[in-house]
Structures are given as C-alpha cells and as structure tokens.
Length: 441
Figure 1: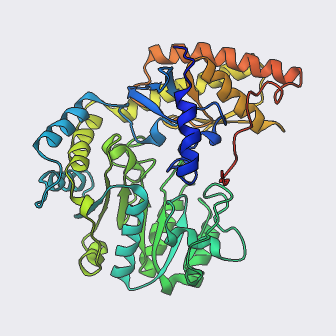
Figure 2: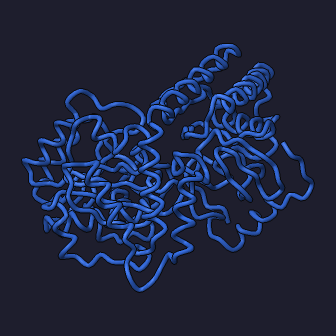
C-alpha cells in the first residue's frame, strides 16, 4: 500500500461536512458508518475491485463495492467502450436515444410476462415511479411494503404512525420529518415470510391497496409457499404485486430472483447493477399493470439521456456471456469459508450468513460495534476496504481472495488478542462506527 503524508482525502471530507449536509449524498458511503476519521471518503481511480484514494493509497474493495452497483467490477472495459462511444456521438439532445428502445426490448425478452418498460436513472426515484403507476392504474392509494425501498415520502410514510413501523426494514433513526403527516396510514409494512401479518393487511386494507412492493428475497430464500401466497392474495384483492429487484436482481439470478422462484409479478424494478456504475433504472410490467403510466404525468429530462441505456445494454450482454451469477456465487462461497475458517482458528464469536453473492457476518459479542470498527480499521491498514457486508463482483478473482485471506487471518488474530486483553476500544484510533442515521453537524 502506498503511504502518503498529504492527507488530502481526510481534509477534503472535513471540508465537505461544512458545505454538504450529512457530508455525502448516500448514507451507505458516509465514512462514519465504517471507521470515523479513518475511512477514505474519496477516490481518484477505481478499476476492477481496486481503489486509489486522493493520497494515492491503494485498496482492494472487500466491502460494499459501490453498494452493489458494479457487478462486473469497476470501470468494466466493455461497458466503458459502449459509454465512450455514446458520449462521443452525443449523450443528450432534443431527440431520444435508440438505446432506450433496445434496452426495453432486452428486458421484455428476459421477462416474457412483461410487455411494457419505463426508464429512470436511480432506484429511489424508480420506486416512486412504480408506485405512482400502480396508484394510477388501480385508482387506490395505500401501499403494503416488505423490505427497503428508498427515501421517498410514499415509503417513509410508514413511520408516521405511533411507532417506528419500518424497524427491521431500514436503519434505525431515519425520521420521517419532512414527510407530510397527511400520508399517515397510507403505507403498511409486513415482515418477510410472515403470512399472518400479510394476510392481516390484505384483510383490513385490501380495498385501499394499490400495490404490494417487496423484495422477492434479500439474504435468504422465502419459506415454501410464501411468495405463492402473496401472489394469490394480491390477485384475489385486485392489488398489483411489485417485486423490488434493485439490490438482488442480476447477482442472484440473471433477470432477477423472481425468475428463479417462478413467481410472476405485475411489475418489477431494476437499478444498481443494471448499468454497472452508470445511472439507469427500469420498471417493467404487464400491459394492464402499466396502464397508469399512460394516464399519470411521469416525466423527466434526464430520463432521456443516452449513457444509461447504452451502459445497461452492454452490461446485460456481458452479464449473460460471462455467467456473472455463477461466478459471484462461487467466489462468495469462498469468502464465506474464509470468514468461518479464520473465526474458528482465532476463536472469534462470528456468525456468517446470507447468500454467497452477498456474504454478511456479525460479531456475536457485547462489544460488537467496537469489534466491527477495529476490523475495518485493521483491514484498512492492510490495504482493504472491509465491512460486515460484501457485494461480490467479477473482479474478486482467486488472486484477490488469496490476498484477502492473509489479511483476514492477521486481522482476526489482532481482534482475538484485543478481546483476550480487553483492549478492543483502547486499540481504536478514532470513534466507533455510527449505528443507523446520525446528524453530523
């Protein structure tokens, strides 16, 4: 790892905190969520799973990897070529790019149940688009939700009640301040695999429900019959079923997890890995479900730029050609094995869980957060960006995992020593990682 005494990266972030509320624009990339005063906020270059910060320090990314957006790895050459070609030809003008039609056709070909597509550029706004379409199609207002679906009013309205209804769905501390109080009792959460909770919402709110928005899965499979039950009950109640594939889509199963489970929704949402780092999002659906897109005003200038669709077309073509799903499953399983082996070797209280494509683990200890922070701090010093969740990519080759294996073993050894000597907090070189949302300034 290159050393430097300039500290440009940390200095820029301290300045950013004075002019950008929250310091950054995505909570998942806030340095305080990892190792305050140590985590590098900015990068000069990113390629594969390698990152160079503003001080020319080099890291391998064995953490969130652009929050799952770059399944092929950073700056994939084939996607970059398609983007560069489109930029040279002009990425925005008074007319529309033909790539958006090509992308719509590709998505419908992958999903025979769907025949209509609307594009946006980010997952959060796309969810708002999908909900607007569903409400316009059904002429109903209420939404049932399961899982995390972004920052918009329609979703955070669930927290306008007497308690934190979204606890377990998103990070604690996300206050619905700024969400109109009039939206109270328009969004109703239920827990994954909880048939009774879902049935209660259908029973009590069915005539008001426009849609059920849910992730078909995230870290583990549905219980037998659960998705089938949701599909059957929504059909009987005239409620649209919208699967959120923004995070799990493409990495767990090509085309989305719902195809693997054999459940056809009325609509499905994609973003993140769809453009491999370039902004693009898509909602697909049946003609009947998407009828509201004709009648409600849903329009934005930058939904018509060309880079997003060009990147998505190149990404989909390559994802299929290289069997990205199979590769990340194999490499992720190796990462899970490394975590278990290192934890056992050093007698650390670690539980590894989740799908192989998105391994996650926990420290089962009273000092769990301090251990997490020390883990991240120690890996940083060894040239790795780490965390308790790893989005595996095509760039996580065996050579990279060999390097990680060595760094992981040394890191877990230090954590075990710190625990044995009751020095976990003492060895931290800064504050502990924040848990949930916290105001910075």
